[in-house]
Length: 209
Image 1 (tube, one colour):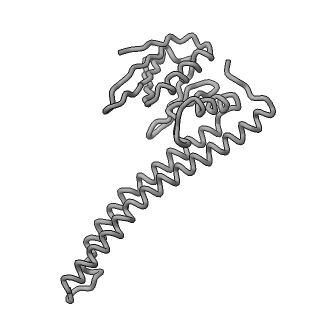
Image 2 (cartoon, rainbow, N blue to C red):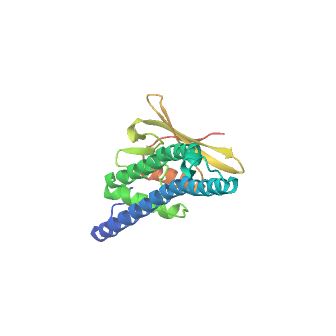
């Protein structure tokens, strides 16, 4: 059965939710900071290099701005390339935070158990969430919600990625749609299968090669 927190547990659960959201916001700000610092660092270095070249060549028929204008244009384009990445990263993290707000107390407690069962360095976007009526799968561009009642079969397999191995879970529905969840770490697979068993959904689980 899915756990339900007591009155005292609900207070602790709210504290966990707030702590997790703060961690996600720090992750968002950290990633955004990286994608800002990379073009900013390149900009600073290139401007310095061009300025030193301008001084060494003793160019008198152009101002430094005129001399560096083509480079500044390229660097501006580079920043515009990173800008969508910054916005997209913020969007994904904010969307996951909203999903945490939507979880009822029992499934928020379940997510708390997930964070304890799965090794992690900091708060991050989980590959799946269990809600009251469905499994939530955060994808790059959308959120997939797969109702428990619509799942015909669950299968999983391992795949090799470089020197490590990953796992893909496939949820096949009665409408013959397939929803895939990919991740690393066996703990995520064990937790997923344990919750499916706890919910007594009577969905066949198959390991494929």
